[in-house]
Image 1: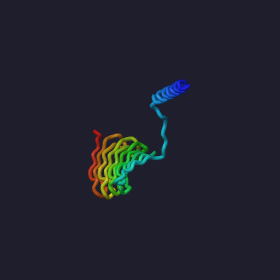
Image 2: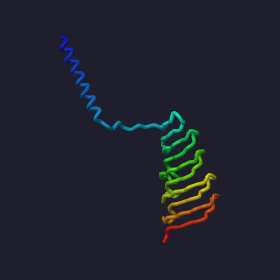
Image 3: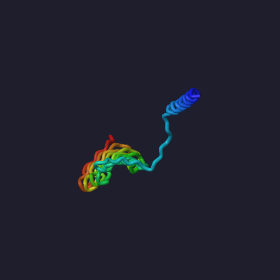
Image 4: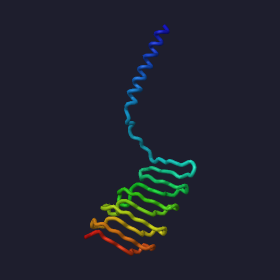
Length: 142
């Protein structure tokens, strides 16, 4: 009787093992859907947040430092911020969505530099003073 039980138990274990090994071969576990994911640093309270808006790195004061996501023209963008949350640089699509730009701002929020594409698809560079007044412009058109 003991031999029958041992054989039966062995057969169940082997069958279960076969199913487990066959099931582990599938590497695709389907879709994972969540509203957002936050990764927090336990020492400084800084975090990385991932949501449908994009990805943000947040400092220990709760202010954005870097944002990767949608820009002004529904295209992708990278924005950097000062320690207190003011936007300092933008890299992405221009407002019309027909060219890329790099835009910098000073501590007062005024645009001081612009490198990108103009409305006629030519390259353009603009430098402005601390008040946002344009001081120099160069166009790539020949």
